[in-house]
Length: 254
Image (cartoon, rainbow, N blue to C red; front, side, top):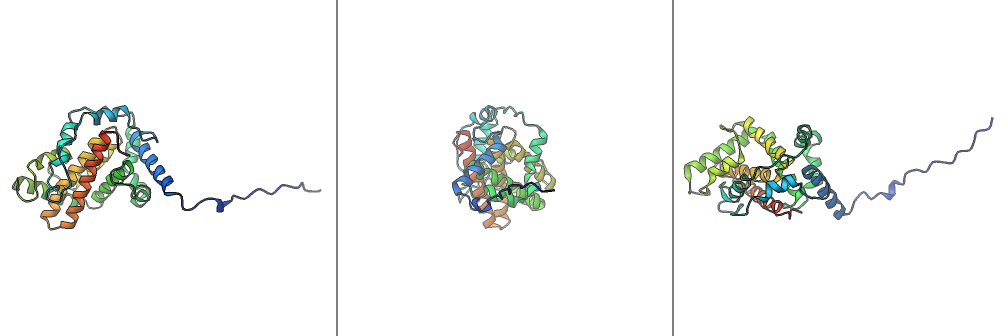
């Protein structure tokens, strides 16, 4: 019995696929992925709920300066005080989806997230989302040290008032950060999860300001503990978070 002739199947042209995509395409994909997580769409448009949460706040103050951003009242406190005056309506996203987003780095690894978002500008949707994930990851890996630096920062703030690198309203930033008292390792880790969850529930601006307040208080603690370079790194982180919060509130966070 003769076998019928079959036309050979075409093989995939693997050489036709560019293994080094255009940087502009990568940036577009990074922004779309960040937008999907934060807004629930890929066009970078805040939802009406998130706009309501961010629209009531006003810009004021400054953060991240070399002589005082570690003190926690500055821009993060004044902006957050205004933002907290508006009662954000939670988005329809369910708790299970939010939990998956919060634990994304636990699932796929922070390195995978870094490949997507770490090269984005600091003040951009993917760039600031990367910073939120990186902050949570650092806290989860160093909960005791995180609690030590935060506790030291708030104690320095209360003890010194205007002295050194501490601003008058450092205590207010502690309230904005929302860490349970006393701020032990479990409390700091729980706050990190809550802050990141807020970014996916329609109060993105407040999530950024809470993270900035935490970074500012911890930066004061690092300075007091002699970790000067690390203190400056957290000061810069706080500055980036506050700038992103203001841009998001103004609908200019690209």
